[in-house]
Length: 346
Image 1: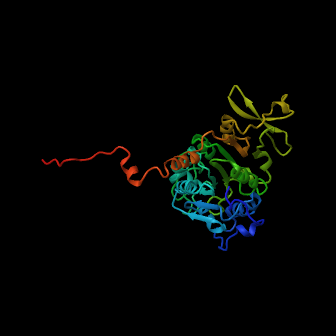
Image 2 (image 1 turned 60 degrees about the horizontal axis):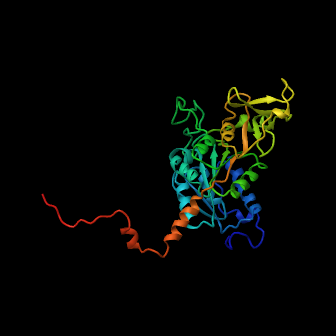
Image 3 (image 1 turned 45 degrees about the vertical axis):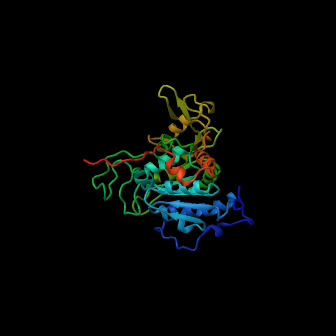
């Protein structure tokens, strides 16, 4: 840990707030995420000098301007690649990647996949509003089937991509989900992601008030939130509902999770599953919850399991091993090289 890792005096939300005018549409969910980050970083005990935000292109990618830290506003979809280089150049930095469902899962899908596969020590936040906002409302990889937009005037014909399933399929070791309006829930997720050694992936359900307003209303509205959100806690029963009597049970016949009501049809709390965030197969099933009527959407840490291998340490180890042992000429001529000794003419 270097001298920049711990602030000399306690910092506040004002210390992490830049002097730039925030330029998002009034009512955009990005405001809530920004304010939550500015409020939570001081609680983590980090410093501005040791913190970097890297973004791509999109509404969410204006994030670095509004943080009084270091930051890079890069190019479309390439934020994970730039962030990887930054982390390898200075592994002491806390590097956050800010991306959106279009930026991260469309043009940047390959870069995001490899950052997760390599388990680079990055904190990746994906703002998912199920639409392209900055470029005026085209459908995105996470848009619902049938979404009408300037790019799909008759309705999209491809099924939506599930970011949680994508992250799991890419080999991520930390996967979580929260929502822009959950100001009490989001800080805890950010802290867990920051504390994880490796690539942490957080999907944030975020509302675009102009081009896809109320896209998450069926999950976030106060009248349904208790019945539509399953708040996960490692080692705790997966109970939810306005009365706290609904739960998740594993059905071996279907090899799937199902919703049950405690007290009905002989169901007791003993039938309700306990969340195990180290179980990858359970995380896959939890990530798919919410697709069917009556199912809640899993929130919190779905999967967290420290990897045995560290990509960052492995790369830095190779660099350290060669340091001082070779010259530039040795490197250039040390591989598969050949010499043309004569000129062949026709």
